[in-house]
Image (cartoon, rainbow, N blue to C red):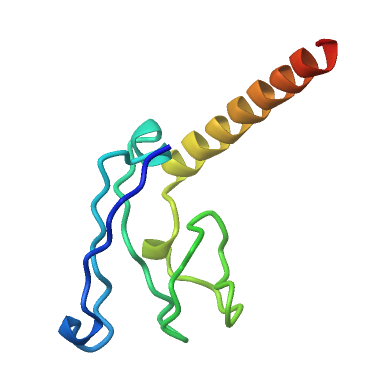
Length: 98
């Protein structure tokens, strides 16, 4: 497991600017070839935590297309989720046998 050090002063941010946080371990983003980006809901200005869902998790408004995964990105994410689920089930079966 790795950790990123966040060195940030909140008074340095201007008008709700979202800080870019760089990480040496991009995690799942590199596996689906997607850049990590901070998106905000245009209605309530909250952070969009999941680009998989079509509605904002805070105000439930429909999000614009630029806040969502493209069709190809969504297919890659779905495939990755299925693969990880299969790996987890295989691991659980292996643990049950021990």
